[in-house]
Length: 156
Ligand code: AMP
Image (cartoon, rainbow, N blue to C red; front, side, top):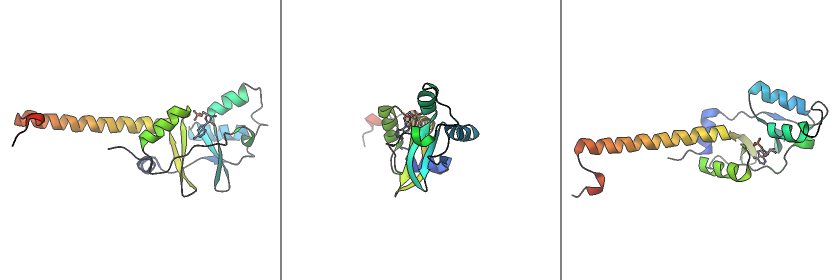
């Protein structure tokens, strides 16, 4: 069975880490380090207005010689954010992340932020799905070996 975004959030929780657009890049990096994560959402009240990731720091701050204590997240965040809803599947998330070359997908339900799915969550869910399928197939084959009846040849 395919894992849904909702199932992922049930396991990992719906906590998100967010900063205001006026926060410094340094503050965002501190938050990422404290929680061992690679991105922060940028919110205005409850509204999602952007995302800022470690890659943004590397490419838009370090390479441009900016100072992380002066630069604000609002100036450098990505504003056109792609999101998923809890009913999306893990395959949907994988396709969006691969096609767009990013590793974070905020989950939005009825206009409210419901959590975030990362590439790590996706890989973990795919491995779990595949190992469940393999176990089912093992059970199926083992059952056949016990009865000595290949399923494909079962005739009543
Ligand atoms: P990442 O691989 O997630 O560190 O992100 C690579 C680039 O894509 C950065 O510029 C991010 O701001 C941007 N990005 C990350 N996640 C999203 C998303 N869900 N929608 C749009 N852009 C994103």
